[in-house]
View (cartoon, rainbow, N blue to C red):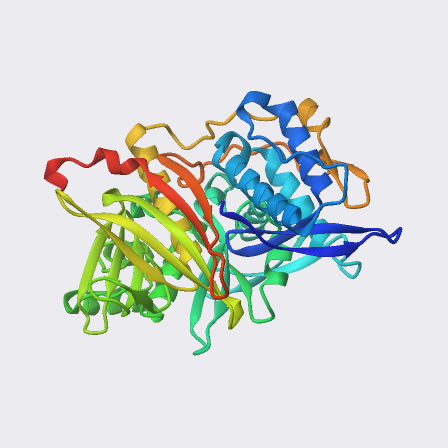
Length: 460
C-alpha cells in the first residue's frame, strides 16, 4: 500500500467545535478522512495485537492548540507513521487493519441515501454484466465470492480472479484503472471513481500455467476463454501470421481448450496494457506503450521496436509525485526503476504516466508471485489469523467518539489461494521529501526487490 496525507482540512463537529481532518490517500486515491484521535485509537488497537516494541512511534498529543507549523509537522509524522505500519506485513495483511480501513472509508464516503443492501453491476469476461446484491461496506474478497456463487464457479477457483475498476479515456478506449484490494468496498470504490467507471472481473495472476486449474472447470474455462477473446478484440494480444489462420478457425468452431492452448503462444497473452505514456529511455520524453507480462515489462515504441525489462533485473523502484503551482489538482506522477542493463551497469529508467501506481502494484505482484513459486511456500497465508475472541475486543473510533466493534464489519479470515496475494520478496522503504518553493513538492516511495538477489551470471 502507498499511503499519503497530501492535505488536511479544518472541519466542524456537531457541537460546533473545530478539528483537523487528515485526508488519507491509498495507492493514489482518497480513501478516508480521519481525526488525530482516530489514528491514535488505531495505534492503541495495534498495540493489543502486536508487540509495542515493533510498532513505530506515534506522534505525541499536545496540550495546547497547535500552531500552523506544528499542524504541518503532525501531518508529516502521521503520514510517516501510516507508511511505516504499511511496511509491516503482519499489520498490512491483517483482518483487523483491512476492516479498520473499510470502516474509515464507510464513515467518510457512505451517505444517508445508501441503503443497507445495494446492487452493484460487474462486467464478466465476454462483456456480460451481472447485478450482485451486497452491503455498501462489503469487502472485495467477499464480493468476488458472491460473483462465483452467482455464475456457478467453484469457491476454490474464486481466488484466481480479482476485481478491477475500469474506465474509458478521452479517446473512449477501455482502460484498467486499478485492482481492488480487501481493505476497500467495491461499492464505494466504483461510486467514487466517477460516472463512467465500472467494475470488471479478470484473472488475478501472471503465470499463465495457472490457466490449467481453471480449464478443468467449465465455468472457469468460459471465463478465461472470454477474457482472451475480449483482449484479442482490443488488440491487447498480437498473434503472428502463422497463428492467425488456425486461431480464426478454432474461434469459429468454439473449441475453447484448443484456443487457449494456442493463446499461450501468442505475444502479450496474459498481459496488462497501459495507456501511452512518456519515458526517458532510450532518450528523454520518448513515447511508449507498456505491457506488463509475467516477470517483465515490455516497452513498445511508435516505430514498433521493443525493449524488454525483466523484473528480476530491477534492483529497486520508486514513485514520485510532482505538484506544480499552475496545476495543483493534476499532479505529475513518475515511476523510476533501477535496472541492470549489463553486468556492471545500473541505470535509472523513468516513466511518466497517470497509471504509475497501478504499474508499481503490478510489479509488486509479479515479484510476490515469483518469490512464492521459488520458495515453494504454497499459496495459503503465512500470517497468523485473528481469532473471533481477539476480533471481538477490537474497536473503531468514529469521528464523534462512538466506539464500533470491528467484528461487525468482518467475518472470519479466509484462507487465500490467490497466487499473487501475499507479499513476499519485497522490502519497501519510503522517503518523504518536500522542496520548499512555488513550483513543486516530491513524495517518494522506494521498493527494494529481493528477487534481484537471485540473478546469476547466466541470466545477464
